[in-house]
Length: 430
Image (cartoon, rainbow, N blue to C red; front, side):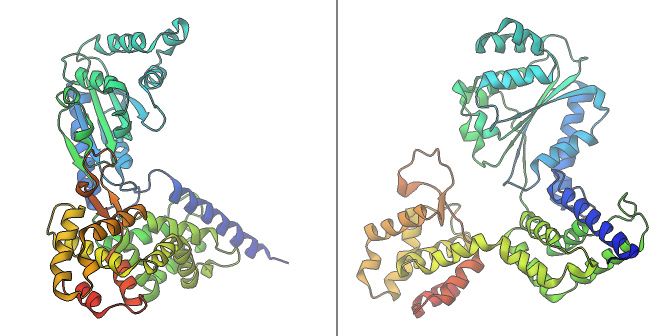
C-alpha cells in the first residue's frame, strides 16, 4: 500500500506529465528561454512592419516563407503580442486548407469582423459579398483601426478562381484608405511564381525567409528547456520534487548516449520537430513511481520508435539496383558541392556520366534512356521529389530535390550487399 509521501510523489509526477504534454503540443512551441536566433530576427522584422501599420496607418503586405514546423506561425503570433497596443488593430485569420474558395473566406472575414448579419440576412452571392466587404474595408481613413489579415497556407489561396480575393486584399493595401496589413505564411519557395501578374503587381515584395539553422549547443539547451520544470510554476513551486526532476534532466543532458541521439536529430532535423516528438513519447511512457523513470534507455526507445518511419526508407534503399544507388550518390555529390542551383534528369545524367564512363564496365549504365528510367523510378519512390507540382516543364527538366540525408546514403552504401568498390570510391571521393 502506498504511503502518503509516495502518493504525493505520484501526484506530482502525473502533474509534471500533464504540464510537459501541454508544453509539447501547444502551438507556442518556441516559447521557452533558448529559442533559435533566426526566430528572434524574424520577429523583429515582422513586429516593425505591424507597428507601422497599427501606429502610423501604413498599409503593408509581407510573406513569411519556410519549411513546415520552422516557426512561421509562432513568429507572427509573437510579433502581434510584441506590437503596440492591441486596441489599435483587429486580427483576421484565414487558412487555405479551411477556406477553399473566396465565398467561405469572405464569410469567415465577416464573422471575425462581426459584420456577418448582413451576409446571413440577405444571403449575398459571392460577388455581392466581395463588394460588400470591400466597401467596408475601403471606408474611413488612416485613423481607423488597422485590420491585419493572416493567411496561413497562402499558396492554397492562389488556387482560388482568378485569385480574386488576393487581388482585392492586396489592392486595398496599396490604397490610402483604412490601414490594412496582409501577412501570408507558406512553405513554398516559389510562391511568387504562383501569383498572377496583376496580383504580384499589388504585392509589396517584402519576404521573410525562415531556415532552421540553430547550433548544436542551442539544440541541447532547447532539450533542457523543454523538459525542465520552471521553478515558479503552479505545478510544484519550490518543492523538492521540482528540484530533483530538474537535476535529473541536467544529468541526462550530459549523458553520452543522449548526446549521440541529439546530434543525430540535429543533423537530420534542426527545426526541433523530431526532438519534440521523441520527448513527448518518452514523457508519456514515464512510470508513476520515480522521477528517475525518464531514463536513457527510455529516450533511446522513444527515438527508435519515432524514427521507425525512416527505417522503412532504409530498407527501401537496400532494394535499389546498383544503377539507382549510383544515381542517389550522384545527387548527393551535386548537392554537397553546390555544383548547380537545382537538380534535374539532364544534370544528374551529365555528372553521373563523367564518373561512370571512366570506371564502369557496364555499357547499360551509360545508356541515357535506361538512366532516365531509373531516375523516374526514384521519383515514384519519392527518394527524389519535384520541387513544384505545378511545373509545366517536361519530366527531364523538372527541378528535383533529394529526400535523403548524407548519413542515410552513406549507411545504405556501407551496408549494401556486394556493393561495388567503384561506388564506395564515388561516395567518398566527390
